Image (cartoon, rainbow, N blue to C red; front, side, top):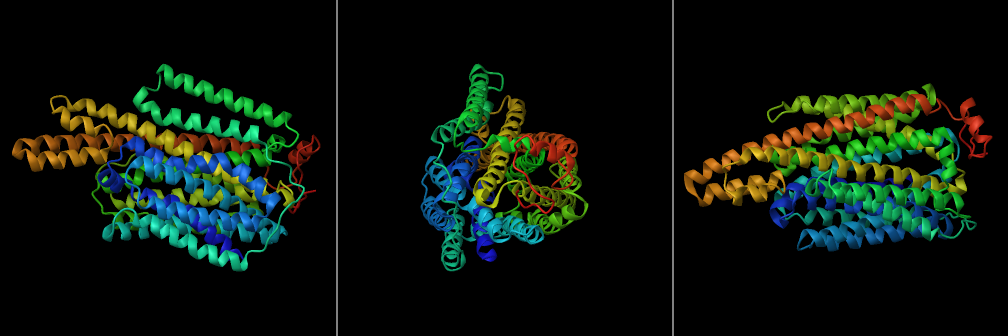
Length: 517
């Protein structure tokens, strides 16, 4: 059963990691701009984040096994159909459907796990293994994706995801037990609508900001409207008889601090992966497979730290371990901000190890802290909140870090004055488009075109590296703030005095071994 659940987690995570390795290929084969790349990644993340709370609640009510099988089937369809997308817009649509499937699958895996492993020590071990599946997918995705891209067209990576979903579907049908909570209340449709609109508008505003301008009227209105919708969502959930998200959970500092830590960690991770795959292929000229292999340090360290982190949290306290993980992330991004176009790979590998250790020490212990707050019969909601924090962080990470990097990159293109507009215009879309334009110039316009193309390529690579560094600074600042807040607000262990005072005010409670009371 646990292997089946880990396989389902693998399908969801590999659907993200394997696409990142193909981003430069999508520029050349589908003509995707950086804006398109942001949406190809975030369409999946946004659908996941927007629907995961509703999916978790529905799975509690109608049967977790049924929802797991349904989600895997939809993932299979979306992956195979997406493999033959003819343009970026079609691919974005199929990626959004894959995100819907992920929203169904992911919370079910954790809710089934916590219903089966009810004793805290067993649950900690199971969640550690469950978290290690993320590290495995981060390792397998880039390597397998790179190998496929070396031999086949870009769509082969999605066929691999579809094959993984098909195998997992068969195994889950055989081994996964069913569980449900028939008393789960009806779905809060108003809350679902408001949360989806708020998240969608926020991400749309961030991704469009480099084109519109960060201080433009449209951007400012977008941020204000998203904040207003989010406020309405919170008010709706407070008033609702059966809220989609019980906001009273956030009165529990253990729950809130752990959720914030997960959000910050995945904000940094997703943004980094989005940029580093392009750095390896566009700046360092590594092939897809070479890039995938070079991603292994972060994947391996995530897997190892995910196994060790929960056990350390039980011994020395969640506060210290989660904060240590966030500090490791901050160090990784501070170090990564010094990367140049000629930095040794061994240096980058060291940065990735710090990054992976930080994710593993943060994510699994924080997840255990979140799930220890909610009762087993509401595990779907608790799991969904945990997943929503991951995907919300990842969605915003790609949008914010990607958009900031794109803005810095475009500022560098001001140095292209004097170069033909037919070279500079496509270069504004992405560094990949700039390199393609430079190759075309060299092949069609002889020595003059070669000189102009070389100048454009140098400026584009330099701009991308500076954008990458700026994005790392943003990520490091977010994780550093999260580390401080974790030390202040996250209780060291379940059942501390600070938690007990919160519980007395009506928040869900846990006893010292994490069993809801």
